[in-house]
Length: 180
Image 1 (cartoon, rainbow, N blue to C red):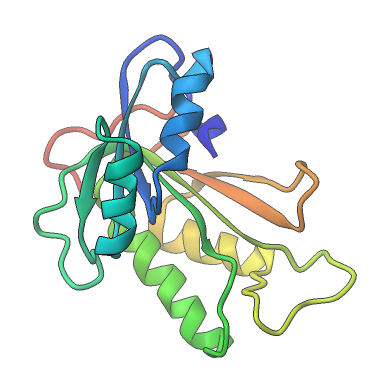
Image 2: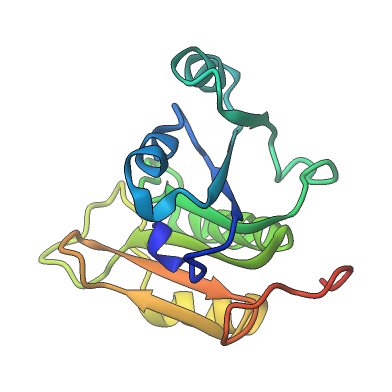
């Protein structure tokens, strides 16, 4: 998920949406390629954040439901939404699609440079009824029409899912202050 960060030699802020136990921070700390990443985790679950704080007292963590209100959410260079759009359980495909659209839209408003999210592919031997299989064309149509026409879709890492990196512009430069 961090591969979408284009900058390699300047500090960048990253919001890990749905951070759970903040395991992404462990990866950031282990891999020297990500030493320039300033990590912040966000989760809707107080219990997860309590456990994350117990394992990583050094972590910057935010408890917030951004779909309820994102007024107090600061801006970040990048946001990562990893694993949030894979499992849908018993909710309908349409409800899950609206959730994906709503959450990516809200989070993207707080990204200066871009975001990354993953979803289950439809290029599979069979689709599970409890997973959210999002067709490429549906993802591209929404992202290109509502977020940005500058995106990269990666379906090359072996799992039955893909990652989409969405950027403010083709070069990955930050948006000007005050721009939406």
